[in-house]
Amino acid sequence: LILNGWHQLLDQKEPKNKRVFILDQGPIYMLMILTLFGSERIKQNHMKKWWDYAYYQWAKTLDLVIWVDTALPVLVDRIRGREIWHSVKERGDYDAYQYLETYRLAYESVLTKLLTCSNGLKVVRLDTSKNTLEETIDIVIHALNLENGRINTSNLIYPDQ
Image (cartoon, one colour):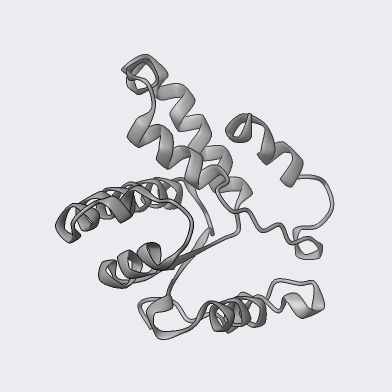
C-alpha cells in the first residue's frame, strides 16, 4: 500500500514548492525492509518489473532525503540507553555493529537505486554524533526553511562539501 499508493497522494497537481511532506519509515524504509526481509517470491526475477516501477515512481516523487545517521558505537550506545526494547541491547558490540551495518548497507543500496532513477533527488546525510536530537531537529527545520512552510535546500550542507 505504501509503495504502490502513497506516491499518488504526494504527487498531486499543486506545485511542489507549496507543500512539504516529511515521511518517517516511508517508502525508503519499506524498500529496504523488503530487500532484507521480503519473501523469496518478491526477490525473484519475475518481480523485477515491480521493483523497477517502485524505484522509478519514488525517485520521481521524492525531492529530498535526509538521512539522519551516526557512527555505529554512538548508535549502539544510544539504543542501549533508551527504555524501549531493541534487539541490539541483547547483542555484544561486534554483533550489534554487524546487525546495524546490514541495515545501513541496505539503505545505501536503496538510495543508490533511487538516485539512478532520478533527475534531481537530493540526499543529505546528517551525522548526529556532533549534535543533540534537539539540535539536529533545529538544523533540519532551519535548513529546509520549514518555519516559512517552504523547502529551501540551498541551506543544506552536503556530505561532499
